[in-house]
Structure formats: C-alpha cells, structure tokens
Image (cartoon, rainbow, N blue to C red; front, side, top):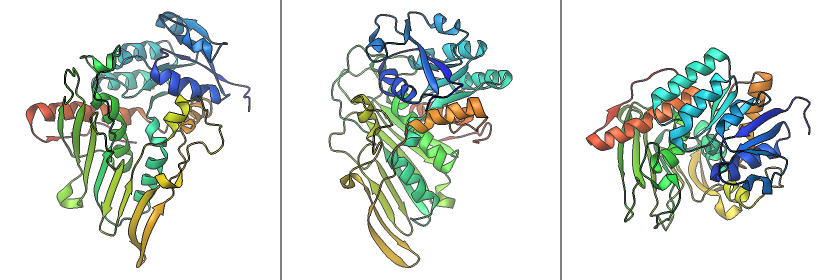
Length: 361
C-alpha cells in the first residue's frame, strides 16, 4: 500500500548489513523511499535498486534536505561521529547494532536526539527472530515455572580468517562481542532487565586470529535470591551446533536448536511479503517438557513466525504517528555498557557490578 507521506531514507553503506537487511526491508515497505546509498568504490546497489542515487561521500547524505531518516551502518568505529552529524543535521537516526563503541558516545547521542526531538533507535533485528519471540512467550507465560537457567548461544563454524573485512581486523568496535554478543545481551535485557553484575571470559581461539572470536558472558540477576543464571555464549569454532536457547525452571525445560530463517531468505533475495515469511519447518521447532496445571506436557512447541519488517514498521509509526519506540536508546546504552564491563571483567578476572544509569524503559 502506497502512503501519501513516505519517509525518504539514506543508507551510509551497502555492505552486508545494507545489502541483506536494511535495503530489502526498507524497499519492501512502501512507506519508505530509499533515496541515496553511500558506496565509495562501486554502485552495486543499483543492480537491485536502479532508482537509487549512489553517492560517494557521507556528507552528500547530510546535505540532502529531502532525507528525513539516515541508517548509519558503517563500521562500528564510525557510528558515533556519523550518528552525531545526522542528528545535528536534524534527521532521524537508525544505528546498526551495537550502536556505538563506548557507552558515553551513546549517552551523547541520546542527549542530542532528545534536545532536537528526533527519533534515535538501534537495529536490534534479533528481537524479531521467531525463536526469540517464542522464548519470550514461554517466559512471559511462566510455562517453566520459576526460571533458574537461561542459556543463549550464537555460534558459527568459521575456522579461517575472512579476508578484506574490518570485522577481522584489530580495532575499536571489532570482534565477536560487538558483533554477536550485542544481539544476545539485548535479548536478555528485554526478558530480564538490567543485571546486577557481569562476568566474562573473552579470547581468540583461531590460529592467526587478530580479534576475539569467543566469549562466555554471565549476567548476574541475583542467582542466590532469584535462582536465575543467564549465560550468553558465542564461538567461531563450533561445528556441531549447541542449542540456540536452553531454558530450565522448577516445572520444566524448553530447548531450541537452529537459527531464524529470515537472514538466509533475505540473502537469497526474498522479501518479507513472501508467503509464510519467517516460518520454520516442524523439524526445527523447539521441545517443551513441563507441567501446566498439574498436567505433564511434552512435545514440540511451534515457533512463532519471525518478523524483521516489524522493526521498520515501528520506526515509521514512531516518526509519523508518535508511537513509542520498540528499541529505545537507553536500552542500547545498557547493551554497550555491559559490553564494556565484559571486557573489563575479562581483563581483571572478576565479576563487576552493574551500576544502573537511567531506566530500561
């Protein structure tokens, strides 16, 4: 359905995130018009989107008065300066996760956005993974009773160093914690709020690796009082998959293998308006083994359909209709702060308290 008041948007990069996620999702939603994409050395985006203007400089986006929303999806180290420039130019801002590399940078962006009355959000698309949506329902409905253990994995098998990518080079904002832990931390914040403490082990396992490529992060939610332990794990050297989610409570368990199918579908050129979008085959559904109202229930739990398009639906409604943001700036601040504490915990070999700043709301 074509809207009378579309939002003109620009992407600051056409790398993996622009090609696979942002451009297809925005293109599929006719309330947005992708006006410009920054590509310094090519015009690959025009192969799929011939109507788009390709520009060579970030400044060309800032100078365009017609562009109301800018997606900053350049390398993490550029997010703060570019995001600040976008907001100072009076444009709404979507940052690719993990938002910024330091919490103080996110705090500054929040201050500018609030002062100027602009929308600031972070592309935490994994909130709309079908498996996470299902886990969220399991937790909210108390299907496992008193939850005592929540374990989330985001593993890959990549026993080589990917060439020609900043994600494999030493630098601020690179490494698996910024790349993958940002997703798992955000999901834990959605489910359980801000933790009391952070304990982490982070390192490099691959030969000739320059970046951290595995982590174990434990978020402390007062395990002695509440009985809940939250463990987040990733590694590039996991050939036999572990469960994506494993939840255990005093009435039962829920275990789910496999990754949400939306990224693969987008990579193949499918769009969210495809029939049965985001649905999983029955063989991929998680297993629920619990007790409900005195009845033992054991079997597969159908995975809810994933829905990445919901992210930009919310962005449109926040800009045009005043809706509340689903991914709020302060939530992104907490994610970055937890990442900072994880690195500090790894260096100092100890648990660090999380000193709450602001509300997770």
